[in-house]
Image 1 (cartoon, helix red, strand yellow):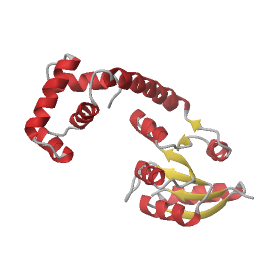
Image 2: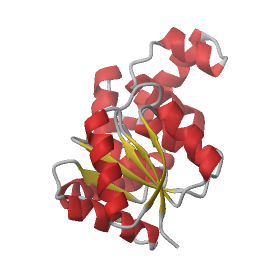
Image 3: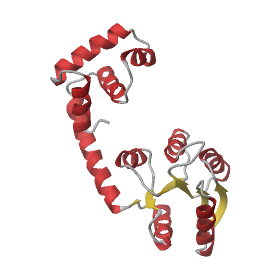
Image 4: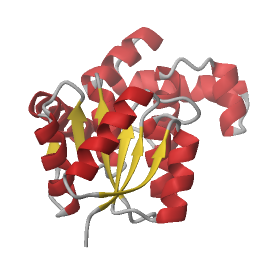
Amino acid sequence: MPIRLVLADDHPLILEALETLFRAEGFEVVAVCTDGNEALQAVRQHRPDILVLDLRMPGKSGLDVLREMAAEALPTRTVLLTATIEDAEVVEALRLGVGGVVLKEMAPASVVLCVRKVHAGEPWLEKKSAARALDKLIRRESGAREVAGLLTTRELEIVRMLCRGLRNKEIATQLVISEHTVKVHLRNIYAKLEVDGRLALMRYAEDKGLL
């Protein structure tokens, strides 16, 4: 049986080129989509073997689609296709179970090979991105273990929210606690980590790979 694909990219020329490429290679293209919402609906409806997914799309981004697929435990494997990707995005994609990451600058034969490998259960990552992402994953796991020995779960949650740029009042609202309680937690965090304020805490978190 041919490998069944859903293709998603917001550039019609790229989408048409992908469809032509995969059909010529014997794949069955069951749907083509121009935004993240369409891609998610197509995966739910057709249950393809592989979703070839652009990282940056209107409606829902590629990472948003991956998050919803993970939440719904959809069995389709995913290959991210992108012009550029940040290390943090690779890390997040790996965490969400992406099967492969392919840069659009790669040769068509490499894109086809990636999809075949991912269908066979083998991961495929562009080498430079993979090396940086794996290094960051190792740092994050090591840093998380170190910080977990110092901070409570609530304190670690506040650190991550602070590093996303949230103010004390916004943190309090999201955690359904008082702003005073947030300030108390922050004083305790500063003392435990031996940092002297928000900026130093953000630098500490970045160094430990927690961002």
